[in-house]
Length: 182
Ligand SMILES: Nc1ncnc2c1ncn2[C@@H]1O[C@H](COP(=O)(O)OP(=O)(O)OP(=O)(O)O)[C@@H](O)[C@H]1O
Ligand SMILES: [Mg+2]
Image 1 (cartoon, protein in one colour):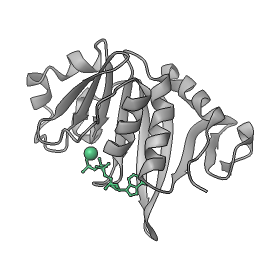
Image 2 (cartoon, rainbow, N blue to C red; image 1 turned 180 degrees about the horizontal axis):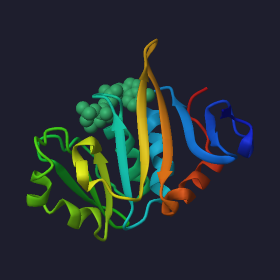
Image 3 (cartoon, protein in one colour; image 1 turned 120 degrees about the vertical axis):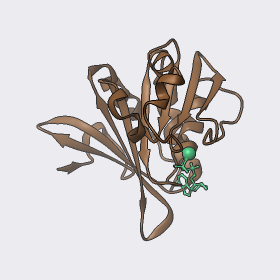
């Protein structure tokens, strides 16, 4: 069931309910800036040890969202896509590790990259193309899925859900959510 009266919010935020629990938050982004803004809300809550997995097609906005998350987490430099080098590290309120696993041919390569040390280390791990993690998929993580809408090049549906209790509190940050779109 789709439900948008909880938390008394605008028509830009929806809650996907499952047996009366909020299972996911679903937001409509109207442009790049709005997706960054959504990331910023997440970034304000993010803390050392957190893992955020970003799902979505090529060009859906995972790096744009990461830019907002990083800003919210105190990163001052501009986040760029780490596609060719797999990981970029940024100093923020704590270290931020931004992975793009698209070019990985085998999840075995992650062992050579000490991937798990970053994932379960003292920073925040943000991963694009987590499908490539295969058996290294963590038990608990915040999952964000970005989908393009066919009828509008600039609109995205962004679904945020928690896997594991640790990430339940992320939903709270959207209580005060205000879209930058009209
Ligand atoms: N609502 C929107 N949110 C995010 N990006 C948008 C939106 N509308 C248009 N765009 C455009 O879509 C592109 C998103 O690019 P981005 O690099 O973030 O995608 P990505 O999901 O990281 O792709 P990849 O899988 O190749 O890394 C940008 O060019 C951005 O300007
Ligand atoms: Mg990207």
